[in-house]
View 1 (cartoon, rainbow, N blue to C red):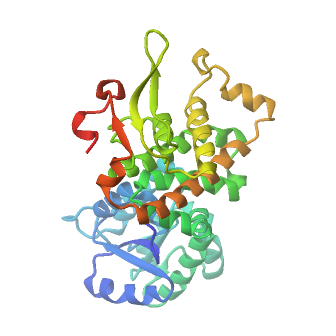
View 2: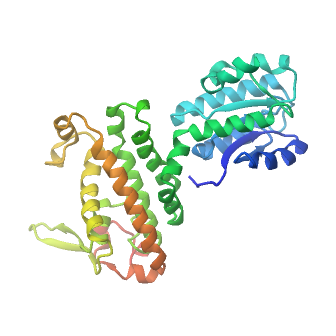
View 3: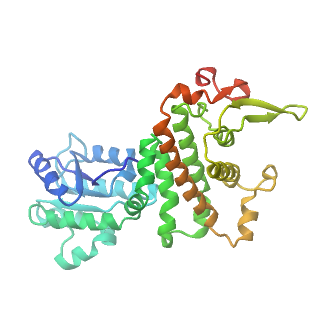
Length: 356
């Protein structure tokens, strides 16, 4: 997810006169209105980057499809149905508001009560379910800003702004960005999640690490692992240790030779620990995990969430270090000179993705 200077508002509106004038006014309320002419386009924008949006504004008399006729009943029925499905799929709802120039009789009956979760006080004070164009638009902009700043994700982006800026500067994929948010939000907003559910998020920590390592591969700092990132070998190579495995006789065989340690000592220790523990904690205990067993460990610490929370902070530090390292080490060829693949087959790396 990209970090935006203004609060992102998805706006379904097909009147050019309105789309030319409202966005400028909205900017004075820290909002960026992104207009789309029909619900099909808006739905695609939500599906493509759901976490970008802090609010949705619906012009009631808009189109369902590009070639549809304006119909408040059809448009709102389909839009609100899809919003409900998408909110369930993504685990949280984006507050939506109806802003219209139409009559109350055209829109009120089509607006469901889901909006009362965030907009009840508006209905209680104004005795209506929608906002009137020209009369209520500034009031709506203020309310969107207020609700957005209360949003946990917006607040997390502000609290850890330097970390998320580093995520973007390093070119870490949006999947990594969103997974890091998923780890940090419950730390500051714990009431919405049970400890057990948070402890099921070790997969999110692995996702962040995988996308950090993919970003490093694109800069030559690590080999291109392809579809399956090798977390432990990535950690070894950053820590100045060659990636090795045992042969049939039990001897250590170098698969990827490391020529230089680039991690500071503290991050070397924390990353090595995380890349050993996190993968094992992402699935049910089994015999192959030896002494690293999630359920056994959690039972001894009263199902504490502190281990995973500490990983979220350690990963954040790792990202900040990565940004600073990358600023001084942009040359892909020089970065790739720090490691050398000795056995492509054993490394499960295609030759064209290996040493440069």
